[in-house]
Length: 121
Image (cartoon, rainbow, N blue to C red; front, side, top):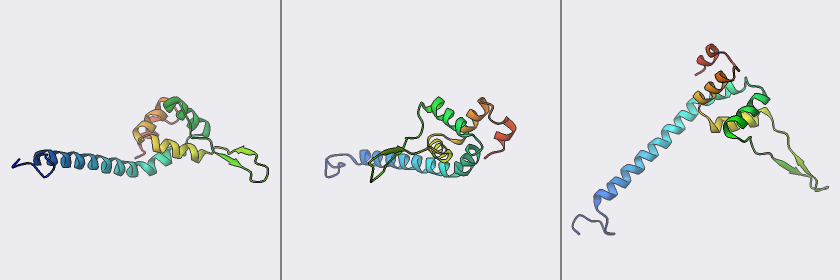
């Protein structure tokens, strides 16, 4: 047990685990960086969609829309469905799609011309 650590694993196993964890951490950091780099462009592009186009995008590509929220009046105990606004759809889509996916959808649905979409970065 000369090259093993105190719990019986070899140093190579420990090094491999640390290396794998570093790779995973780097992947998360890269994904986060890409998300924040694309955030303004995604918002700008999605803000040009109508609410109905945003709703269709959610249904067509995800099969769902943002969750409906409810409010219960304290006095009457009546439950009211809160309206869904354009911002609700925009934030939902921003979390689910990358910029290229949004651009491709906008182009395929003829929401904007390709020349307009290509200028957004």
